[in-house]
Length: 218
Image (tube, rainbow, N blue to C red):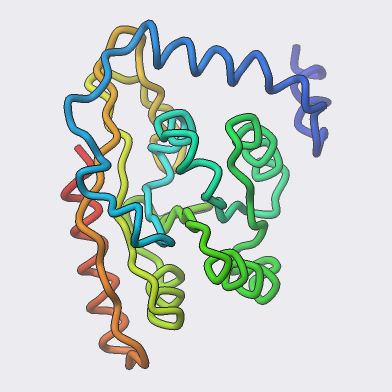
């Protein structure tokens, strides 16, 4: 078993068909084994105001692509790390029609920024995990704040909350919703970030957006 696991961890890209049963299982779990949220996130999302820079904590990502309507998923790109694990995420969300921009602050940062600007300019949402890929957990990075300040597009706090879940012993305590739990997609109010921020103003806006994202995260 140890050798099998070790060999698996060396695989950088799995075949696309490998993700089909995973995606189908997620859709089945959401539709049949989980109680949908009574909160309509689209009351907070003005579809005429697209695009958004959405922010969601890293440990709430598992059901993120499955919770949105198809029309929203097709207009969304996710900013994903260029690592091996990021490739797994890329191939999985593709099953839901979500495309990706590959990059992080430490790898392909300049290329990722250029692609992110293009994605937003073309009218697509950009989904960012502001505490990923390494943490610290629940701490807002400057990336989405800088991007919103530079482009003028609003930040939209989003969270996937589950009434019951398993919690992994990872840096982010990644959450896996349990069958028959209540799973909710919750959106906060969009946030407009002013242009030309000073370092002090950047820090203040990071703390502000962090609080607003925590407010919608159980």
